[in-house]
Length: 60
Image (tube, rainbow, N blue to C red; front, top):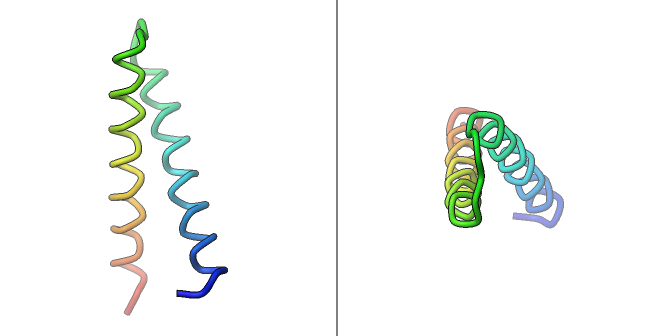
């Protein structure tokens, strides 16, 4: 992969992570430290999965 592709992939993962973390924060009523860590980690896993799924669908 070239540098541009790497940066675009990183930006896509970051965008997914931000969106999924924001969605999680909207859906929970109270946030303590442990819940925040677990929620952001789950959002990171979801962001990686979403990026991988999109790449599988678009790469031929």
